[in-house]
Image: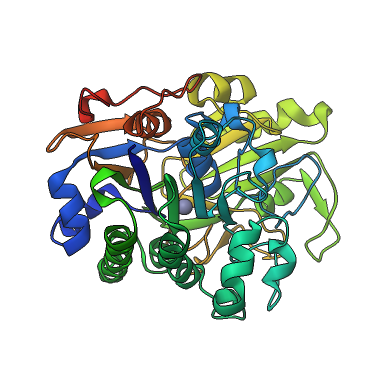
Length: 430
Ligand SMILES: [Zn+2]
């Protein structure tokens, strides 16, 4: 019986491959396995959309997680993120594995709250709770076995201003492999490379230091599987969810809509009424039409921004066009993206249309993501193990190909996905 172990590094970029080859543990996997160098994320290339596409093999229109934040008409602003697995409208590779009688484990993966997996700890930091009481959120969203066995000693990593989900993840994951045995299918997600890029930029020296930390973490997990699991029969996957792009300017789009008279506020940043509203997805923005009588006027204004020398919109796509071109559906009317490396804010209390970058901020930091899939940087998919050929290089593939390919590694077919089996990297016996 073959097993699957997935190590997810948020915002792992294609440009990281050469430095990873030189590192001890990444190097071992890369040099003995195969990889896709440019893995195109789904549109919008946001953490929650991409993680959900990775496990379902579906584009956003097929799984319903169209943003990090819950996207809802009339909900402005909104800081609540998608959290619960029941919001995912397609089965995941872990659901299929469970139905086949395999043990399943998901640590710190987004949108898994309440998932029916053998071991589940959903990604909760830094969202969904304040300060020192993560237990309130975790009750009923994480599985009892993890809550009962580990929260009493490792819960402290999730508390306070300096809390670190990666520290918690790396405390729980090796212990879990030792205490419960290696699950048949195990997904472990790390966050900090994404934070470093949001803070310092895509190519900053600090990204290499952070990759070295992730290499050490992978080393601990590989050693855990060597000691307590079934290393020889495990297929290892290292992947990212999206790349990032260095940002040159931040455009507070709702401030612009306010200036043009489409949004009226009380002067303190609260909407009094509006004809349309922008929900930022960082490098792209969802536009919601609130007053249908003004739709043509709003659309004409958006289109005029293609010619604006500063804003330089690349496209203004309506719902049908987003579905047709990028398989995105949701409660929005238009989507816009700039040719320039502009990140969109959606605040109404900054008092200016062009605002400063805020290093570390996920939407308007030094670098960010959330664009159409083709935009640099993309991410990667690296695999090694008994089902994987050695030395196959694939230049490009799509994120929706990953679920069906990983399922095949452990011997089952995942039907009804949007993906293509990357069979060129798999051995014939699958
Ligand atoms: Zn991410």
